[in-house]
Image 1 (cartoon, one colour):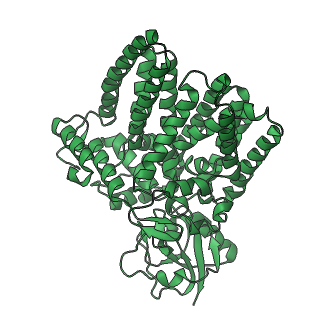
Image 2 (image 1 turned 90 degrees about the horizontal axis):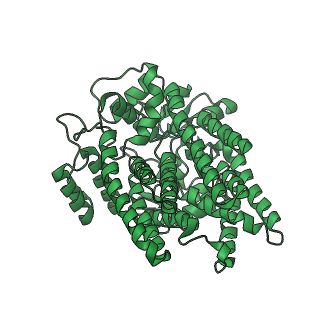
Image 3 (image 1 turned 90 degrees about the vertical axis):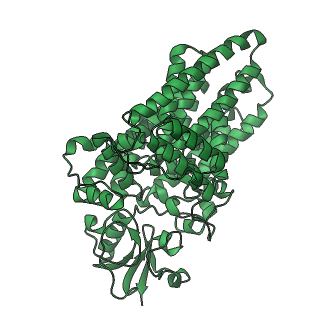
Length: 543
């Protein structure tokens, strides 16, 4: 166990040092800093504040220069790059690395407690070499913290159902509050827990049912008190994001049920305005959609199968094999007394939240990245690990498990130098061809300017024309670039005559996922075979 934790820590530190600044990190870090130091919640009201504040905590003693008049992207860029962006990103990523290690310990401990030491080690190995968890486990975003808080809430609820005491009920409410303060999708845990409670009620004897109903009523009351109180506390018990300011837009932008709920809660000031604006925005975003890319096609409303495809191509062959073995083992043992403990059993506590989240994100229209499935993966890991002791009893079971481990760990280690975010399995043609299936934050999240700079040094290229989508800055890396139309924060140096010499283009620009301001020159490159790759960038030598 200690060896796997050490390997995981090394992988995370390596990723934190080699990946550049992603699109969302300056937003979250800057907003978190303002939340902590000024109780200013005007920046990024769409996202709950907890993960952002945790990432910004190490910045407090650095004596950072704070520009006047907080605003939107302009202020974020000034705050991030007028200070040392390299130092800020390095410190802000440390808490997320720690949270990833805590997630690993929770997965290991829960699997071990329920199914023995071998299951615990299997769960830890699956997590330690999971490319998506490694990719996001060192980034100062909300994705990995949401996976941790989801699982922590599920663990506390499982323990409460086993022994429904008052202290355990309080822990459930605190864990749920942390989850909904990290990611709004954590509210999906409420129906998931409700379904698990109904299954538990159905399974117990009639004499015990009344006692359990009473305990559930107490848990409901505790949650109704603790969760809103925790949300208010996170916002400094301030209703407005800033004195005399408002961020609330027309709630009718959300679907009708959500709009009515948000309007009613705003009318009575049940929760901070900023939090409710986040609910409104996310509901409207999920209903209206976001430009998405799948299998070479673009859509403004996405596809129902998007996350199913993403799950299939972004996971290692070994992880898919482990899940297949778990399904077979579950079907074989379905009718045996040893297959479950007491319905719904721990398998239900892992399966129900995973299915609820997967279905919810698939129904929504925000198809911008497999990272939305990150809360699903710890549950899937636990389900796969639970089957390991049973698979070992099969003929050649040990060989199957060894194959799964090798086919899981080796691809993750091989892709690490080019960044785990770019991992695609053989179904997509590997990392070099993954852009034919998925892009956006599945591949190109603005993180590869450092790899482009290293490529230029190796190739002896002094200057390039750069089409970039992201929040990093070439000057931070000493990268000399003339700018093609792009979507970025830094004030660039426009190329006088586009497409001359060595040209590097972000996949998101080339594939049309994001549109640059003004004329779009990239369609003329889409049918041209690139002359090379530098990280995720397509390299052309023109004319």
